[in-house]
Image (cartoon, rainbow, N blue to C red):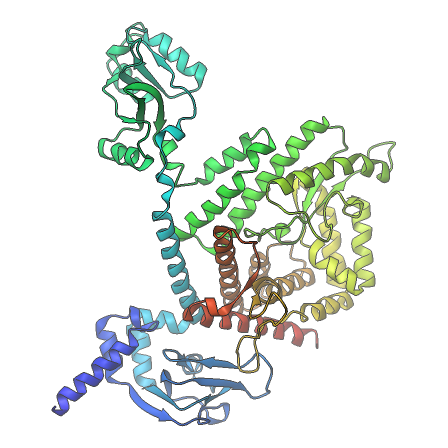
Amino acid sequence: MGNKAMEQTALGQTSDFLTQHAPFDQMDADHLAYLAKRLRLVFYPRDTVLTSPDTGIPEQIYIIKQGRIRGEAQDGEEGSGWELSPGECFPIGALLARRPVQTIARAAEDSFCYELGRDAFDHLIQHSAVFHDFCTRRLANLLDNALRRVQARSASRIAEDNSLNTSLRSLIKRPAVTCLPDTPLKTALQVMQQEHIGSMIISDAKQQVQGIFTLRDLLKRVAEVEATLDVPIAQVMTPEPLSLPADAMAHEAALLMARHGFGHICVLERGRLLGMVSERDIFSLQRVGIASLGQAIARASSLDQLTPLGHDIHRLVEQMLAQGASVEQLTRLIAVLNDNLTRRVIALMLEQHQHNVPPFVWLAFGSEGRSEQTLKTDQDNGILFLPQPNETAEQSRQRLLPLAKTINEALAECGFPLCPGNIMASNPECCLSLDEWRSRFERWIDQGNPEHLLKASIFFDFRPLYGDASQIEPLREALLEQTHHNSRFRRQLAANAMQLRPPLGLFGEFKLSSAEGQAHTLDLKLQGLTPFVDAARLIALAHRIKATNTEDRLLAAAESGTLREADVAAWLEAYRFIQLLRMRNHRQQAKDRRTLSNRIDPDTLNELDRRILKEAFRQGRKLQSKIALEYQL
């Protein structure tokens, strides 16, 4: 084989390797060829140092082809190291910023790396939009890839949904409303209005279908030709409507509707009319609309009607994942629907109590107060009330507690488990007047013992769900004023926020639980999300930020100049990925009918997800390091 042929073979092998990894798998062929021609394959024996803070600005980036490269912090801080595997690149940040690296990169085993010189790197940055995006938004780019995979899996699950394998017989909600062919149009319209329906079947005395009349016919066949209301409905109906036997499947009806552009199917039993199904009936099997779900919650007149709607929320989350919704959109959507459901429960319970209670505000705490709920949500709630004239706070409380108990129990029936710690409105300690809440917050801030710090992490994320929201503003103003001026309490909160550390070992490996029943798992909530949540709360309390949502708090801090926008962007990307992973985990557990848990075995994740999760945990460590530095911990 000649030199040119050997060179082409080598280039082909290099290109084949690159296209197995991000971002090279998305690059244009010309840019990929430019890259492949300029790579140099180098062998590094185990323990070889490739980059170091002492060697100045790096001259090239490395793409690992085989082996492992480990990053070691010079100060040896646990969790600040990292480990890269084939397909990953380093040190991109240092080369972009033209600064020395911050960690020592050492071969953890005998390794081969492709080297790309600085000039070629700069050329690709300028000419390849994909490469530029990856290098300047590395974590965000990886998150985009992960989200696309989630969307593809969700779309596949929806497409494979067998809910359309349902007989039309089971979809009939009520007997069909019919009339004879000689019925005056005016009479038929009056019946349609009385029955709250948008279509009428025209049949003979033996229930043989003759035609159908819909609101569309009213516009096209009546209004356009200016027909009188006295004409027989047979003159304006659509003859020979679509029909299927009762044992036909929903997907057959959907196909028939799509082919003919009709929105109704007559369902027949042995040739006689049994009922009718509409396009809405068919596609409600497979799609859960935000508006329709909200309307169903608002219209529910009993707990029996509210209870099954929780399942629809799960289906809606799956559907929105497939449609490309962001994690932030999903968590806020879940919060809105849960809020609406809670308000409806409160309204129904108030009807039972005949409003014989003083005015109150229903408060949400914890994740619900932050609008950060997923499919696993315990109750964390309370009541704020203003005592009535000639009535003490205790008397008002005693009138409210029975109502609060029925609301908590009703919410449990609707899928919101009772709080194991009894942080619920039915607990007298969580049903307080405005003055009592203010005094309690003052005591927690002034005393600041471990119990008060724990309560602060739950109760300080409060927001109103029902009642006059303006009543809680004085409480929030007083809270922010006190915490802003009490540096001792904030330092205690900061120390408390450092207790839950992202589970990374010295070299960036996962630190897994060995506890019984939790072996080889991570807690995505306590170890992954809580460091971000606690830090954002501390920053908000220190700088009088009224927001309760973690993302809103960090963004407000960036807008005010308290935090760097670039840092906040990286932290939010990391936070969103952990939340996405948690939501996916809950969705799979619900599908498998397992108890929802925040724990996950990282070995069940694909390589990309494990890689991003480690980077997300490192971002959590960086945020905690900032807090530790600011409060000298």
